[in-house]
Length: 166
Image (cartoon, rainbow, N blue to C red; front, top):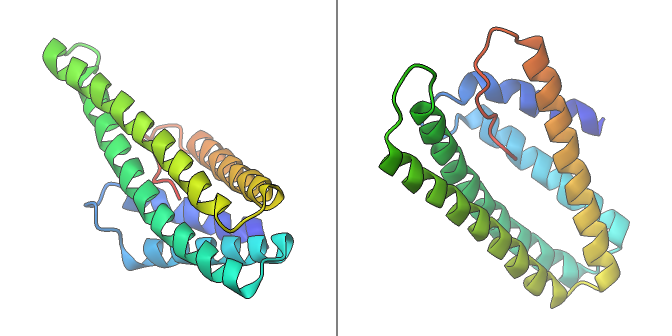
């Protein structure tokens, strides 16, 4: 069941990724569904109290939006870098340098986001619950990546652009 909604999101995303930053309602609805199911699954597995659940939803919602913004920035940097590094086209060294710096900056921001999340979760989750959350999130990301890889293999003539992350 969980794989079905995950597959639906990943399969719906590629044709839509070329559109502007504002995502179509279908993709946004699928994304919200996935996150709601993830939150419900964690709530059940970790046995959260009502107060823990309220705070978890608050922190997770905020964190999810911040992560999405960082992912959008990262995709923009990758697109710029891929554009500069096309075969047969001279790359602009200054642009490439700025893009590489931007990539590192986004990666640092993502790491800082993870630290912030852990600090906030530590205020109301036990270390065991935080570990459960980390493992569940990692598994979800791995499943998404596996589906993306299979999808890319099924589309041999398509450019190897990045599929929007969860």
